[in-house]
Length: 472
Image 1 (cartoon, rainbow, N blue to C red):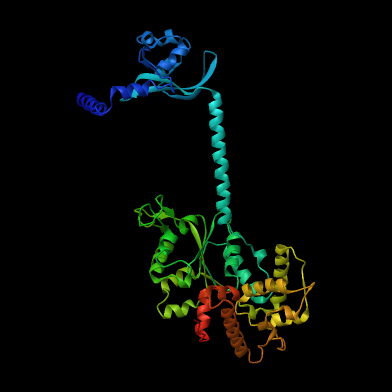
Image 2 (image 1 turned 135 degrees about the vertical axis):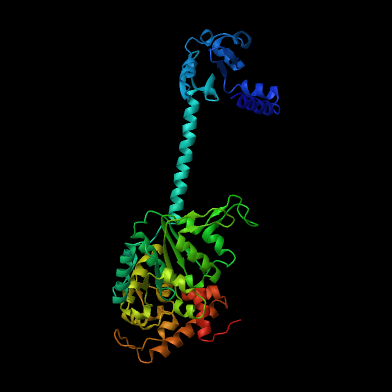
């Protein structure tokens, strides 16, 4: 016990060697707290000079006197007895209300004195503090709302248009998937609505009130994809944010993460993704401690993953992890009976956006829409609906309002159940002609040409290779 006391005394002496008496006195006698200190007997051992106006006594006259002689209404003696602090209490001094704190001074488990100090010189200051807190809370709620809107799901199953058997089959399976937390992969060509289905699954699930985080694996450079997915700690690499940054998986906690174009994910990242799916935890770049994440995974691809596995471009073990529920979305040419419904839906939607009157689609115009091969699928259909609204005059959409590539199919017969005569050759020629035309219109800008066609840039490259189309 004696040794412990000696050690504590030595520590205190060492501490105060580095603090001048001037600094200590300045701290105690600051005008903002009006500090008063008493010992265990209630004797005043310090009184800040700012207290002189309250107690009508000089500092030198107060020292050594009992606290009740200075302030008969004091409650500091109660603080000595209870050893419990009282923070934010109201007290009236010279007819003015003050917000004060009474704090016991404790050493080695016993109370050796008490301190009283002013926290706010007037209740009005507390009102100002509350107003500042309310302002901060309002701002925080605003940014929370903005954050949620940025990462909220935009579409529901009601947003999915179509009554064909293949679409109804896909919707039924997607609704069943929404009731589970199992991984989902949505397959189909570019422009078939894979992201829309992913949104709808999230919105119909129990995770609907949490974030929907989308990641396009094809659009992130290989050297950045790890930091995008898993985040990083401060100073982990040159150019890193000094506060660090959460990754997409962290943002999807308790929500859904949608990995679009997963077939374009580098093999190195496929290994790390597999571990995350197995362990349900991530580790930031530069971090030392893994973090558990509760997320639901939805993937999408327009590539044939089975072929990629055969050519060692995609890991088989990862494929088994993500391919629990496989939802196939058909290309538009396989659901031609839905084209009138979809096209008229887009016309109404676009007319409302542009504040134009809704056009009636003449039968000859609708016929070419149903005959066309639609290499860009539903995305291309919407683009053509927008173009038709711009170029048409009057209240009707005519054949001449359609792009040349569509007009060339005017004499082709329509069949819902049987393939068109020489359909494969026709589709190939039409697709090749559409790509060449889009490249010309875009001055060989691949990104712009893909946008004109309503397909992803990687899809355009694949089709250019397929048709042996060269560009400068």
